[in-house]
Length: 175
Image 1 (cartoon, one colour):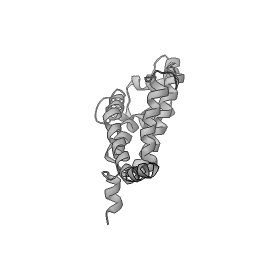
Image 2 (tube, helix red, strand yellow):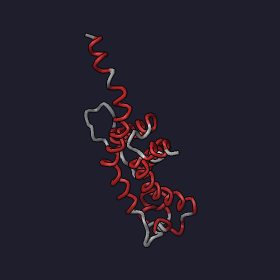
Image 3 (tube, rainbow, N blue to C red):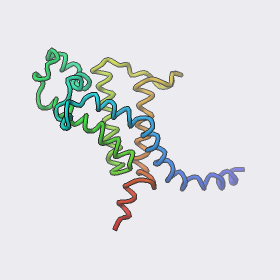
C-alpha cells in the first residue's frame, strides 16, 4: 500500500515545482494586487508626479502618531517621513506588479514580505489594531491569520522562484 502511494505521489513533485509558484503569483494577483494598488492610490498627490507629493492622508496612514503630534501639519514632518511615505507608496505599485509578471520575483517577494511586516506593525502600534490569534477557530483575524497567508504565498516565491510562466524565466533563457 505504501509503495503504491509513493508511486502515485512521486509524480507530484515535478508538477508542484512548476505549478505552485505560478498559482502563488496568480493568487497574489487575484487577492492582493488591487488591494495594494488601491492603497497606493489613496496616497498619491495631484498630477503625474503626485507620488513625490503624497497626500496628507498618506502620512496619517503610515505615521499616525507622529502626524497627530504635529497637529496634522505635513510641513512639521521631516525628510525621513517624506522618504518613507514616498518609498512606501511607490512600493505599493511596483512590488505587486513585479510579482504578478514574475520579474525579479524572489527579490520582490522578500521586499513585499518586509512591506507586510512594516504594515502590520504600523497597524498594531500606530493604529491600535488587534493582532488576533492563531488556533482560535476564527479564520479571519486581520493580522495573525490573513497576513500569515499573504506571507506564505510570498515565501513560495522566495524559495521556488516565479515558475515557468514568468519574465524571470524568459530573461534567464535569453542569449
